[in-house]
Image 1 (cartoon, helix red, strand yellow):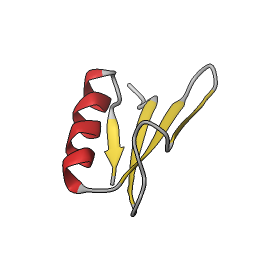
Image 2: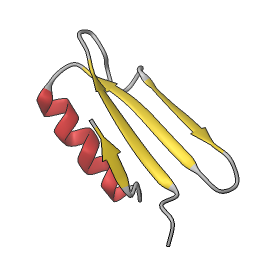
Image 3: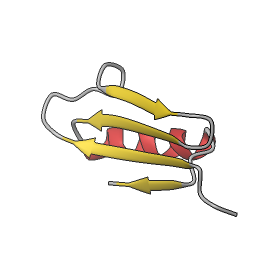
Image 4: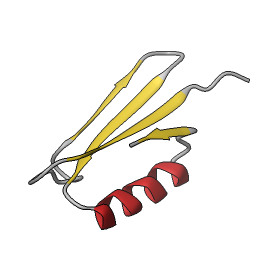
Length: 59
């Protein structure tokens, strides 16, 4: 079964998961990109991504 839902987490100063995010999708593929400013945010975002059905996460 092909992967259809990717997540990308970007770590950079002053990024916030609530305001620094976007989704790119079409009928067969979806990518979610979220910016975070520290490791604790990255961990929570990764957990949320998995819970929402994201199949692969790149950090």
